Amino acid sequence: MEPALHTSERAESDLTLRVVRAAAEAVIGHADELTALDQAIGDGDHGINMKRGLEAVLADLPQLQDKPLGEMLKAIGMKLVMKVGGASGPLYGTLALELGKHMPATPSRGDLAAAFAAAIEAVKARGKSDLAQKTMLDVLAPVQAKLAEGADLCAIKAEALRAAEATRPIQALRGRASFLGERSIGHVDPGARSAALFVAAICDTLEG
Image (cartoon, rainbow, N blue to C red; front, side, top):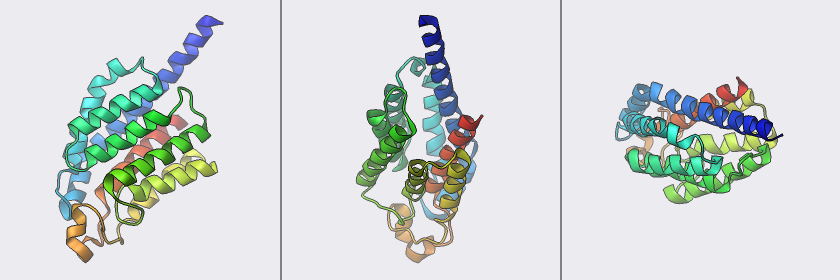
């Protein structure tokens, strides 16, 4: 029985690494798009900052592969805090750190939904923000709701992409974009877009 257990653990670890790699590469591959979105309503560096942080995460993957899921997520969160500049580093870092705190080694869908909900509350507190303020929360919250209600991966991915696009008509109430007032209307929020890219890549990888 022992070799089979090790094989199962290795398979889970390999899947986790594939998910992390795919999510990071998806956002890195859209760095120019994210920067262009941020140039319209923010500091203009979201893509650059995310790319730098996620490349650092990818470089650390060989050292992370043997960690339990929760510890891996915490390590990723710390790396994002240290390497991603602007507001995105603390926010995405908090998301990963809180997921790590609440995630068991082999999570069920219910475990994942509960950990995700706790992480979203931590991001709200960190950013002093809430839904409908044109932030990454406008993607994370509806995705968590889909996850909790039992939606399949295709529906969760579609919800993430829809929710990012739905930030276009919202007036920003938090972050640098809020300084523009009504002029922030008509642009997709870059943080919402990067969150949707993460979710879409994770769903695609899990669906195989």
